[in-house]
Structures are given as structure tokens and as C-alpha cells.
Amino acid sequence: MNHLIRLSALLLFLNACSHTTPSPAAKLDLSSASKGKTFTDWGEYIIDAGDVVNIIVEELPKLNGIQKVSPSGYISLPTLGMVRAKGLTEMQLRESMILKLKPHTKIPRVSIIVAQMNSYVVYFEGKISKPGTYKLESRITIQQGIALAGGLKGEQLSRIIVVRDTAEGVRKRFETDVKGLRDGLPMLDNFVLERGDLIIVD
Image: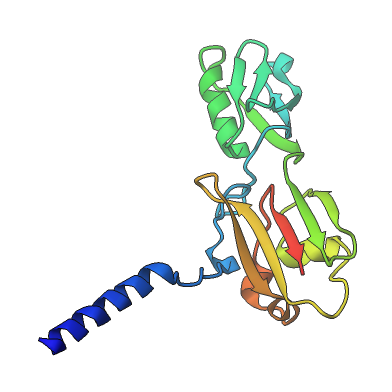
């Protein structure tokens, strides 16, 4: 009987410990950061609000010109009205316009070029030479971004944190060691910055 009582008490104690002592949260490294918000897997830029596109329609010159994507994600064109641009690549927007133009011309010849990537903005904070807001004009890796911001500041540095929105719209922190960045690890050298990223060096 005493043996059973002691065993029951031990089980109760272990159960209580499992509920009162949470395991430490695992740090998320850069390899687990979500991708595809700004560029496709093939490197195509994904248009967003604020970007500027240059449109050429050979058969309908009145549609030609510069268009800024509205906050709601659309461009406004004569004849076609509101055309959604946000979330599309140049090629996808071109295909969308061709479909809309077919009732007006038999074989639409359309060219779309992103003239300004106004939405491709990232932020640097912490021990960086030139912290601040940066509007990027081309696809940039974290290595290139840090160089653009003047490089790391000081010697007593431990980690680089990237705060990024996930596909579900939740902001998460992803970390890497400064040593890995300085050693030029391939994964870090190929880690592309997404619009809205906050990079913190500490």
C-alpha cells in the first residue's frame, strides 16, 4: 500500500512540473522565414500598391503611359476601367490586360514594365552604420542590404534579426549569428529581403 501511495505522489509531482515549467521557445533561423511576398521563385517582381508601371498597347495608344498602383491595388485605364495589378507579375498583368482588350482589338500587343518599385521598402535598426528606411530598386540579399546600410557597426555583435510578415499576416522574428554572415554562408548570401522587412543588428 505504501508503495502505491509513493508512486501516486510521484506521478502527481511530475504532472505538476510538466504544466508549470514550460519549455523554452525555439529560435527561428532565417531558413524558416516565409518567402514569395516580393519575388516569385523565378525572381519575377510582384507588383504592390504604390508601384509605378509603364504600359504600351500598340493598337490603342490612348492606353499608353505611366500608371501608379492605387492603395487598393488597381490601375485606372481608358476603355478598360479599373484593372487589378497588386499581387501580379509584369507577365501576369500583361496577360490580364490582353484578355480585357480582346473585345476591343483582335490581337492585342501589350508591354508592361515596372518603372518604380516604390513598395520595396526595408528598415534597418541597431548596430548598423546607417540605420533607417531604404527603398530598394532591385532584388537584394541580406548581405547586399547590410552593405547598402553602411555595414555592421562595432565588434561586439552577436546576431542579426529579421522581422517579417508570414503568409498568414503574422509578424515573426528570425535570427542568424553575425559570424555566419561574416563567414559568407551560402544560405545567408542568397537570403533575399522582402518588402516590409525589419533588420535588427545587436
